[in-house]
Structures are given as C-alpha cells and as structure tokens.
Length: 245
Image (cartoon, rainbow, N blue to C red; front, side):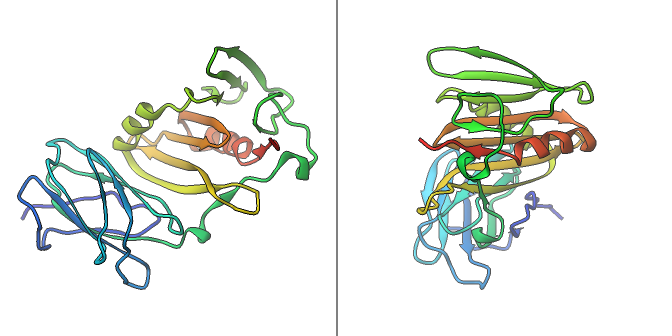
C-alpha cells in the first residue's frame, strides 16, 4: 500500500489519497475547513505557486514539485499552518484552528517599564546580566549576536528589511520531525498580525526557532540547540516588548 504523509502541527492536518482530484497526477488538491467542519473560503495557499480557496474551501495547485516542499496556509482569524508536502502526496484536508487560542500579543515596552537590551531597536528583550552582545550595522539592517556561557550557539537578533533568514527556515522545517507555529499580533487596539513565531525539532533532536515581524521589521532566531539550551533562549525571546513608534 502506498503511504501518504504530511507533518502534523498543533493545528489538525489530515492527508489522504482517497480524494476526488480536480487536476492530474502532478496536482496537489485540497480542502480547508474550520474546527466545526465548515469550508473556509478565501484562505491563502502559498507554495511553489499561490492559490485561494473557493466557496467550498477547495484549492488546486498544478505542477507539484517532484521533491518534498512546503505549503503555507493563512487566513486572518485562524492559526497559520505550514505543511511539509511529501513528493507522493496529491490530496489533503486541513482543519484550521481558531487563532485566538495561540496568538502571541507582544506588549509595549512603555507598559512593562523594564530595562531591555540591545538599545535603540524597535524590538527589545530582557537579557541576562552575563549576556555578551556584539552588534553590526549596514544601510538596511542592524544585526546582533548574543552569547551565553551555558549555551553552545548564539542567539541572532536582527532589525531591518534584510534580516529574516527565510531559506534557512525552509531547510530546517523540511528536516524537522515536528514543528509548530503561531501568529504574532500588535499590542495596539487594532491587534493586526505583525509576524509569525515558528519552532521545531529536527530528526537529530536539535531545536530551532525563528520569530519574524513585518512591523517592526525584526527577527530573532536560534538553531541546533538541546531542549535545555533552547529553554534559556525561549525565556529571552518571550520577554520581547515593542517600542512605541
């Protein structure tokens, strides 16, 4: 029997071959529904080509790559979902989770009244006293590398439009045994989505995390850490606050 596999995130994802295909063998077809089983229209499907679900929650992507690839599924109000689509997968069903269950609302630094570092950036963090931070600047970004004596690899902090390590994130996701993600919302009254927080573990047991924000343009990341080391950096990342513009 041919097996079809899709990586399961915290949001439910079901992949199966017994699905009436709209296209040929080189198509990936699917249906997106809410937790109550209702089809979701207008969901953005971002992959080797982009699509939007119709009134029945269905989509059809042609020219599916012959190798494993990622599909990003996104609609405001629902938790963002990333799928690893194996080369033999040709149909899937996605159940989207209510975004309010997991979204991360980053507070303003003004409201928290805490001392944070590095200074002068749009996104700041509470750093341990023994943290060593090295910074560099270019026209389009500011880059900081933070190291601790009890963690084997550095934490990368970046600000500016050129800092998001997108390809590295794709490579790690494809090699991961598990991963999860959530949206990041502004502390303002509008509460709009300003970024995504993705965390996973590769097959060798090493943990990675990438936080990217569009407004302010910033990223925080680490990779290749043990669970214990990752927990140290997670506390720093989760202390993030946003400076008022």
